[in-house]
Length: 221
Image 1 (cartoon, rainbow, N blue to C red):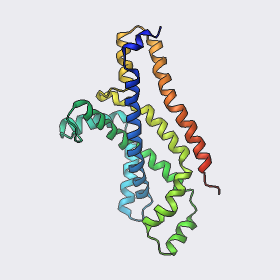
Image 2: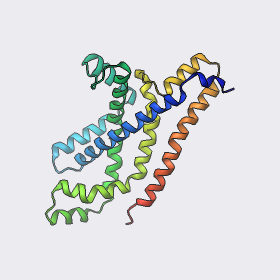
Image 3: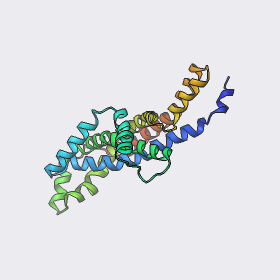
Image 4: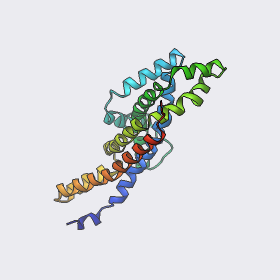
């Protein structure tokens, strides 16, 4: 019943999915943290940019963003992100699109964590002469990250599932392989079950582990 699976690179497709998820998660965490810092910044221009970015990007479908990176940045403006091969260009563009989209949700998860930090701690840090950057980096963000593990885990799980949208620009991940398999084999239910099981293997342990970590590092108030 599963003999036909040997004709397809199932592990290779899911490895591409894992790479998309990991690279996009790292990029989203970095950019999302910067956006969260902007949103609580005392500088009005930075607060305005952070707010506008988050509210705009969260209301744009991910498919539109992914297609924009391919049709707009690559085909119209010639942005190739330092790659020569089409497959590599599409992969990097997909990562860029996922980072631009997911970072908005990372920002809001972190901002919710920032809001759990007592205001008195930041005021005390400023009273002893720390700058805004020092207050944020030494006092606020460490506690915010500990409080945001749960929400960030949910964002990561959503990101893993959202990698399937990269199929729109031809990235050879699990969704592309599923489409190819469905077109070639008369095993729709079986193929769907196999691909779905693959995503469960990726997302379920991630949620369980990060949920456990969240309980361990939670700040006791």
